[in-house]
Length: 207
Image 1: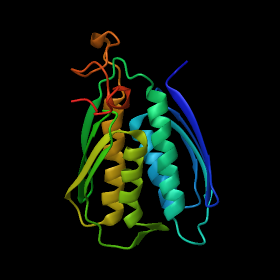
Image 2: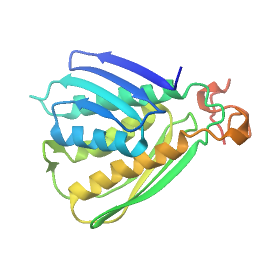
Image 3: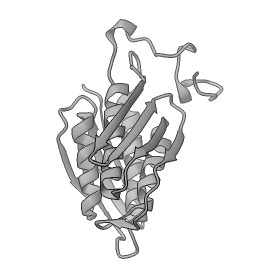
C-alpha cells in the first residue's frame, strides 16, 4: 500500500473530494469550476510528481472563496494522511522557480505544526476567474490543514499570472523534496525529539 489518501468534505457551501498519491508520476484530474485554479492544481501535481484527483463544486455564484479554501482543507488533510508516521522522511524541501519575469522561492518543513509565511505582492484583482487574494488563502489553509511549515517569497516579477504559477511550481518542488524517503534514516523520524508535531504528548512540535 502506497502513501495515499482520500478526503471528502461536504458542507452547505461546497462538496469536495481529493485523492492524493505521494508516490505518483505527476498525473492529475482536476475539476473545480475555476479554470485558472484547475491549471494551478495541475501544475502542483505535475511538478511535485504527486498523482492528484480533485472533484469540487461550490457556491461560485457567491465567489470562489469557499471552494478554494475548502479544497485547500481537503488537500492538506490528504497530505497529512498520506504521510502517515513520517518515518524516514526527508522532511525539509525548498525550491527557487523562475517563470519569465517571475522568480519565487518556497520552503517547506513537514514538522507536524503549521506556520505560513507569505511575501508575494500581487497587483491585479483576478487572473482568469481566480481572485488573486485567494492564492495566499489557499496556501495558508493548505499548510494549516496539513500541519506543515510553509514560506513563499517573491524575489522578482511583475506579471501576476507568472508570479502565481511560479509560486505553485516552487511549492510543488519543495514538497516533492520534503516527502521523499531517505533510506539512511532506516525508518527513523527526522527529529532530535524522535517524533514530529502532533505525535508529541505535549503537542509542542519538534525542533
